[in-house]
Amino acid sequence: MKQLPLGRSGLTVSEYCLGTMTWGTQNTEAEAHEQMDYALDHGVTFWDTAEMYPVNPVSAETVGDTEAIIGSWFAKGGRDRVVLASKVAGKGQIIRPGAPITAESFTVALDASLARLKTDYIDLYQIHWPNRGSYHFRQNWGYKPSSGRAEALASMEEILRAAEVALQAGKIRAIGLSNETVWGAAQWLQLADEHLLPRMATVQNEYSLLCRWFDTDWAEFSAMEDMPLLAYSPLATGLISGKYAGDVVPEGTRRARNPELGGRVTAGVFPAVSAYIGLALEYGLDPCQMALAFTRARPFPVIPIIGATTMAQLKTNIAAAELALPDEVLARIDALHRAHPAPF
Image (cartoon, rainbow, N blue to C red; front, side, top):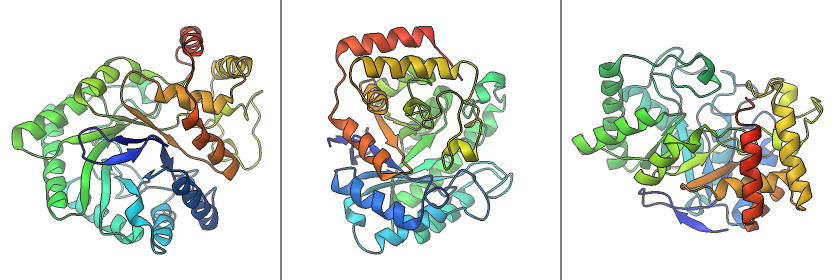
């Protein structure tokens, strides 16, 4: 497993990141510990979580449970071998109902995460989604951008100043974005430059064979500003594995808990999945490994976040780090993308 510089953060991380959001709902604590042991033994030193996790479903009763599971693993040792990322939740109905991220809530949330994680620092602390909202989570189909520019910028500056305090206190080592837009990212960087505040190091947005909104303006911004993409759902919530082919809902899967997979199940998604799986099989590739290797091969800095509910899935996903796709396969993927450009 390659180790890479994480943009301009000064952190060095594995080329794949371990996702954790099912730990506490679909996965038990013991299963999560087994995943952490295996991932670390195979060089996956970069792990991502959030105060909101677990999901499927998200509920007030389980908020923070995933961090607590990671904390129980850290209590046995090994924290110094891991680059840990977590996130503070934005406006929502589950955590701090309806309240935006402020300097106070940023600090309170960070301290609560540190306590659950049983650590005194988080390497990368991310804004889970911006206060002003964005087009992510399938909001792109009816997206209406906010016109409150002054309010948005004031909120950003307030959060950056809270991050500076946390950095100076040693509670975090870097700060990052998630579910953000190019305009938003540009403002965060400009404010940091103007006021000598912490620079946003990364952005965590959705990216996969089936979801490539990042490929245009964001790709250029990421490359030019050295802001790596932490690609969540690189297997499109398991669709690319083929386990839902024929519109089935296997027992115990994410779709059994979330039938529409967060708006990803559409009339166009299964033909697209079938086409990509067909391409993988034609070249003797595992579809999931092909999808992950494709993500790593993009012309901008990117690290896929690999989540799994079984050890077999995790082993397959980690092994994808050994795969480099030939140019012929990449060209065929581009052709399929033209045929199935935005299935959800």
